[in-house]
Length: 333
Ligand code: 13P
Ligand code: SF4
Image (cartoon, rainbow, N blue to C red; front, side, top):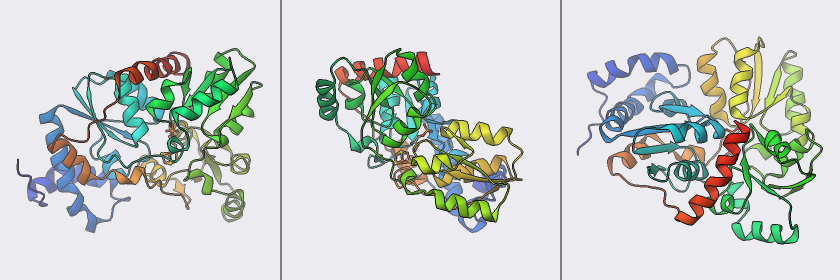
């Protein structure tokens, strides 16, 4: 099937409302290069029965332009399971597409670029978890969803940044193994009396933030509200007004009357929230996730059109990992 990627009058007319909505994030000069992809993806996804899920870190042209469902990791895991079409396309990173496949093994799950990884997921292997369990017999393993399917299959229960404390407390034990994010582990330790055995994984995006940049920004914007993700280092969290998952950041912004906000997280979060909250000044700098940015309109269109880039996971791994995610959804939604 040939695809016409010209900025025709039809494409311009059909994408005009969308452009008006996101125009403050996308320069007018770029629109003729993006709109034809958006138009084609939206046509093709209907013809081929594809539902597009997008994480909150996806760029506005994906988040507002082609996604059917957007959310944080927990929201995508819950909503992904309810999708009615036979195919799901994940605009996110590899572990998110794997989670969708684990929850809907009968569906075809597409990840437009398989090299969209995650430094946390890459920090630990299933063999590492087996060794930790051997060294700490009887201690339950709680695993952040930012891990591979193989690692999830070795664990008792998963969690996301939205429900980590709730999940740990639900186990009613004195000690847990909590993997793999050392900063999320430190954050959780400030909220519970459960003793935590952690791993030294870090998010390459959030570990770059420092408290000194927050102090400098507070001098410039005296009423600044600082909202950080729990993958940030402890000093950054200490210097923040609120800490939470990407979904809770959005909820916080909806409720606040703050005029200047620093979202200490991935850059596209500010771009996406800005569109819904034009009167708020979202203070930069932010950091880009190089993995999230590997998903583009071009590779989304190619994957749908050429019916490729399907996630495959061994059946045994699917059923073991599914148990850990299902427990999380029951306890931690
Ligand atoms: P959330 O679960 O808060 O969406 O975060 C996912 C993630 O990858 C953060 O870096
Ligand atoms: Fe992984 Fe960090 Fe990127 Fe989130 S922002 S996907 S934790 S590397």
